[in-house]
Length: 177
Picture 1 (cartoon, helix red, strand yellow):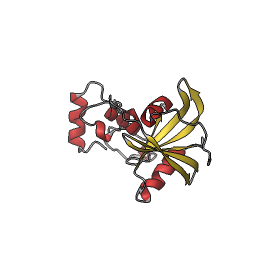
Picture 2 (tube, helix red, strand yellow):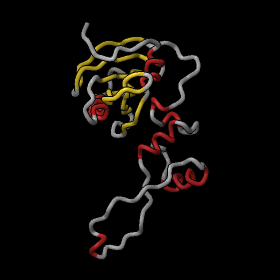
Picture 3 (cartoon, one colour):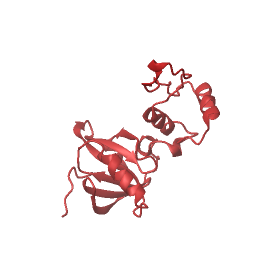
Picture 4 (cartoon, rainbow, N blue to C red):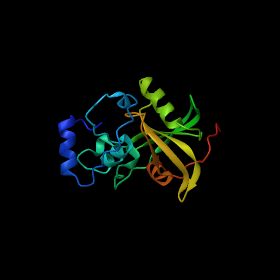
């Protein structure tokens, strides 16, 4: 994700005060049987992905919808309806690329659709997939997003930011008409 080796990661830890702190290493069930391993540092991928989006040196590698939006944002346009493995979706051509909004609030919808898009060669140029989160925020439905570059990492996205990228009010449901 960062394009650095372990030595480079430690440079980032020392260089940036706001770099995420390591989390607890995963539980080793064999440690109880005398397997002595050196403890390893583990970072939460979600926390690093969010940090990357807000750090100018790495922003192009971070969560697409968490990066600061361009100031002169050209309006996006509707790109059509798509059927996906997890339900109906609407595509929007934006300044960042195509954003696909899947109208389903089941778990891991964004990951499943982003994985399908990335695995299928991404002919539509989808950069991120958003799915309804089953809740409402102050600016519209709550969203969870997964970028096609890293489909296994989901993060919360803001409906207002997606609407700003599209340049218009967005429908809260997928319709074929």
